[in-house]
Length: 321
Image 1 (cartoon, rainbow, N blue to C red):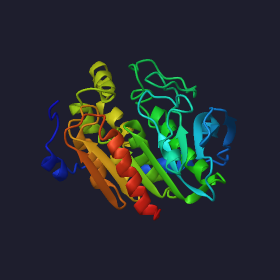
Image 2 (image 1 turned 180 degrees about the vertical axis):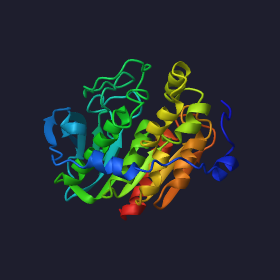
Image 3 (image 1 turned 60 degrees about the vertical axis):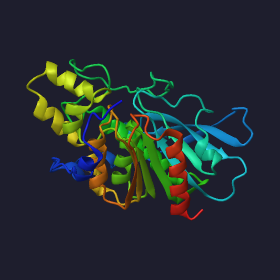
């Protein structure tokens, strides 16, 4: 591995002048303003485990469409718990109910959101994305409806994520004032978007976040989903302005100034999938108190289990546990 982006000193200085749509706030207010309740349902799951209880979750996401997930609670916990809401990386589904137990083992409620239409990479998913797309998309999700903010796939996925955070705050086992959003890569970008769009969130922990600073990311990412946009624009040469306008509505670096909750970022300096400069763009623009852990010699895996311990210590300090 080697540096494929800016140096750490250059990343600290990198503050791009990103284009913010004039109707950004109105677009998301309109998108998230629904009369229907979250309508979360919880079905107990027998995992065979004795120290953690699990439920299969269904939440009414974008357009009332069913989005699935898992809820884990420590068996012997008493009183309303702080809750970690986790969003998944690109291509991953919610997987099997016993796969992600770290946060419940640490005494937190843990709500995991399936990603609509995804689940072909490492962990299967259970949530359909019933929307049709015009001809001309390339494989993946970054070009599904990318010529229109109204039709774009990530408008729906971010809405699902906001509604999962809301469902967590309404669960009787959860302290609504201690709901944290987190995720790796795509999940990190979603956690930033939710922190900006859902004022009830208490903290955010974006880990090597995707969906940040699209204009630069599409040009410099050496691998991964950003290449889908480059591939699309190589075919549809006249749509660059239209495509980047759509992307700006879901760009976590564009949305980040709207966040007020404290945040703990992680950034990997040899990340060829989510270039570190793009993650720093979101970090610099983030509106709340923030800290960052930089992993200078890691690719997109970032800090992995080492960073989980950083997150746990940070939350203990934040919540006084």
